[in-house]
Amino acid sequence: MTRKSGYLAGSERERLLSRVEALRHADKPRILPNAGAASPSSNATDFSTLPGYAELRMQRAVADMVGIDSPFFRMHEGRASASTQIAGQTCLNFSSYDYLGLNGHPEVAVAAKSAIEQYGLSCSASRLVAGERPIHRSLERALADHYGVEDCAVFVSGYATNVGVIGQLVGPKDLLVFDAAIHNSAVVGGLLSGANRRSFAHNDLAGLDRLLSSIRADFERVLIVVEGLYSMDGDYPHLPTLIEIKKRHEAWLMIDEAHALGVLGQRGYGLAEHFGIDGNAVDIWMGTLSKTLSSCGGYIAGSTELVEYLKCMAGVFVYSVGLPPALAAGASKALELMHREPERVRRLRQNCVYFHELATENGLDTGAGMSTAVCPILVTDSLPAVVLSQRLLERGINVLPIIYPAVPAKASRLRFFITAAHTDAQIKIAVEATVDELREISSNPSLLRLPILQS
Image (tube, rainbow, N blue to C red):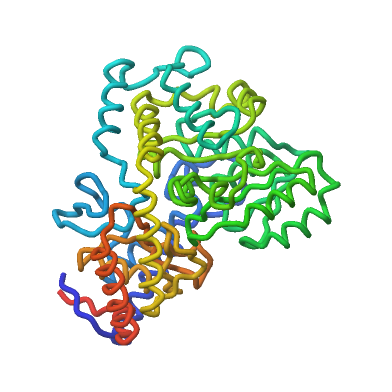
């Protein structure tokens, strides 16, 4: 099959829409007269009847018919840094959150290999029973010192850290309040906790204050959860105001530093350094090891009582295998390098400002972006965002679209991750190509229409 751009003739359009409609309804489970009785025709064991699966099939079929490749699950054939290899092609890469370029650093690699040689690849047990290793304690000590707090616990997954910790800290008598743009892991943790849940408009701290003023007295404990740097918008909350609010309403404050570590603050220490705040003013510091620290896993830093409680009570820690020694050693070395080589943070900050300024000067919509390592380019609808991503890949630039429901409708975007490893020339090429392709898409509506399929 070859594809030719253009509008579909009436009969062809009807045929295509009929196929799409058939796919939309094909997998809807039938409602049986006796829903409680087992029946061999109920498809109860057919995974394709799960909610949303028919929608997935429809989306894939439409994409195939209109010639749009999926922008997701692109295969990288080596280490992804400022450039990467995709399908044998060297591309500029703006889809990696290796913010300081430490993934693959020789010292990080040596630390990981040495840990494997000494401890093996796995701890082979929960840390509570037989999986404790010295490298765990040294990483936790380094992270606690980094935040200026008493202690820290590391977990095998960043996502699971939020789910398990939030699920353990609050319950049915409590209230969880989170920013509307919070990561899915915090929302899921709240659901599993059984706590009452409320969200407030993104970065609307006055709204948060009004909410707590009206309902705080109805609950035993309150946990406020925000991100130190929002992964979709590239902006951050005003920490001094958050601390004032949490004190006034006697609430815990949890900051998810997944994207803030290594990015915010003169030395990359995160949101607290950015605002000149003592780390002890925040009850719970959460973060991941998979971004600036070029490893995998999550952590919670805070008081001795908090960490002791989680290590003995949180199922995500108690019943999970210990963090693999190689990952702990690699993260520990990456944190050491970040502290030792502040020029990496300086270079990242310069790149962030340059990208943001160049993008805005060229008329690109950066939304709420604040010249950080996460820089969105808003494209409104989902289809233009996906088409733009594909056209940029064809020009050797890898950047992924973010579409509904990950972001609100009409707020689809390309999400550029800026790193210290990018050069000014690479940033300039990416911005100029984005401007060119957006102009082409805007001036040629047929690029967003269903093409004629010819054999």
